[in-house]
Length: 462
Image 1: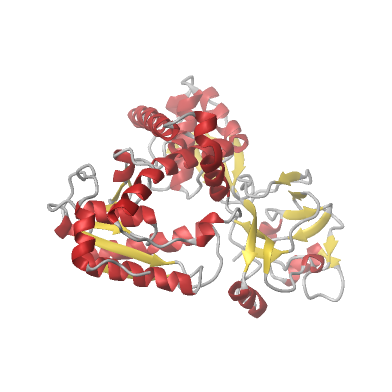
Image 2 (image 1 turned 120 degrees about the vertical axis):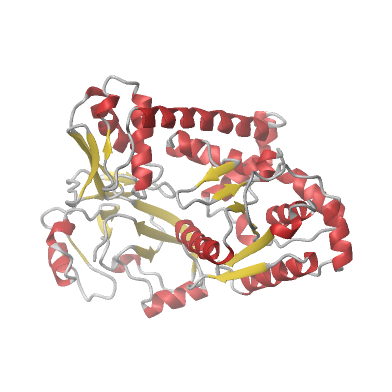
């Protein structure tokens, strides 16, 4: 894909509609650019602002998921920046091949954090637009997200490390169709990520559904309505957070939070405090089921505890804290839904593609079964429970079945951790237990487009 000459590209960029002025900040302004239409439009429209232009610094992170195509994205972004005269820093993920969205986001954020130290920027611009707001709202509503989750992505988001993320396309009310039309009219090229069209990721399925009939079902301009609602929800969440701080519900240095002042207050206020507490401890979008015992106890002034993504959170003596002992989940089977994380135990099941590169890594044993395994897609419903007496199965590569208790002992998994491990079942048979290989019956025999990836985000096994 060839770019216009530098002069032609600059002339085309200068004709794009102006974006809102950035919030007050000092120093460089970083712009995350993948090479796709959204971020190319963002960069060019920001570049059109002559006052902002000298402060722009582009950050491109190669996730190394798409092989040659990923490398070509980096070359395209580098050439685009050279033509515009904007400094560009290229980052590279250590691993390669398929990975979970969470892992890719973590690697990208680590690159951004590293560059904050090098470039010393306070403001990072990302290319989220109105369609992203609508997609996020639908996905988060389906998961039962709280106010903070439903308000995302915000126009301006502040982070604890001091940096802020600015999303001017949302502020300008720009939808995907509008930015594509502007790029085509201006003759500015971009890179297409073929994986965005695959129906594997839930976001891709939502995007395809909206493209096929969103306006027919919801009316023209529905994305603007989603954005307006997200802004209102964000304002309500900020008001609750302010009220909680005024009542003294702030996280202490030891990670605990006093909540006795919430007794008799609206339960929505307790929910906001619990979600903020969990976010501080790295737990986002907890299930309503796991929150209910905590918020009810806070409002009533009682004690309670609940397991959330492998951590036991408790309210005791008017204080929220994380219990260090491992939880025990019991023998009751809970369903595992493909694509929906089970926040009680921190288990995620996804249908993914195992390409040649990932298959090579699996064959070499590069991916430990402690947290993640790849198996054939299930033909029966998935469920999970704690281990029970008499559990046994045949691990991958084993000549026969063995007692689960013996396998855990042989793997030197600490006794206090064993009761916190989910036993994943398929049709009543053990499919996987974190820390152990998956079942021999679910063995992959080569690259597969519709494999099942199981990820456990619970307690560390080390």
